[in-house]
Length: 366
Image (cartoon, rainbow, N blue to C red):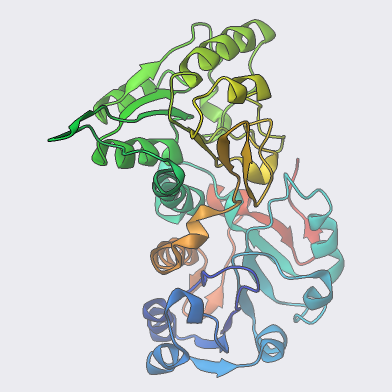
């Protein structure tokens, strides 16, 4: 099996790190790595060569590989350069890009989408969404601290005492919980809100206060995503968030709805009522943002509040993000890559959910 690793054109991460290359080669595969693929994640071409990989051009990776791996999907023109029998692993997000399955079908390849791996116990070690969300939650707090014009912790000095910063985290999934843990380590007072009551115990275990709105609709089948709520609930939620936002120095938002625009949780009026110098880090910017004033992939100041809407904060920690991403993929490959051959079992829940196109046949159902 010829396995190809591509360089990410607009991302510092790399999908497979050198240590994983050695494991692939030991399992009777050969590995092509695009020149400089890991450079921005601090993995040199020589590191890959030392593990047995061959460093080649992008054209060679595309045309010679039986199995190709990347973090972000390649362009339609590059898809046409793949072998007809190729298997391509990436994050296609078919619930966002409705045309992607038709494009992949037209090319005739098999496409496995990492973001479609079910969020079940058996697949936890393959869950790139959770791995990257954890890094994003951590980095969100650090970025907030960079822009906040005050300390996070309480300090008692000869010049007087400084009270701790107040941080409000909206959404207590993986990203939110990591944000809570990081903010608490830095000495901030933290409150967290989530529609899922199951998150309450986890929030408390991290030393934060849980902000609860009664009457939430909870869907355990939503795979860790938020679910659409009733209008009555939204009205109560809006008022409660407004009250807490006005007292907060930092707000970190993480609420995503799968296949839909992110819910608006912070209105412009709420931003206006925040303290001057406050910071909002919107981790839902990629699907429209939880704040009405978020601008995707930008850091802006509105009404004396800094709003950070960078799309993928995990990519700003490329070394560890690449390590985790690579480990997730290696665990995923164990399901169907056996002795240098790909064996897809569509009775397996993980394979069935993540294979969106098989030999040109569309498998994904929206």
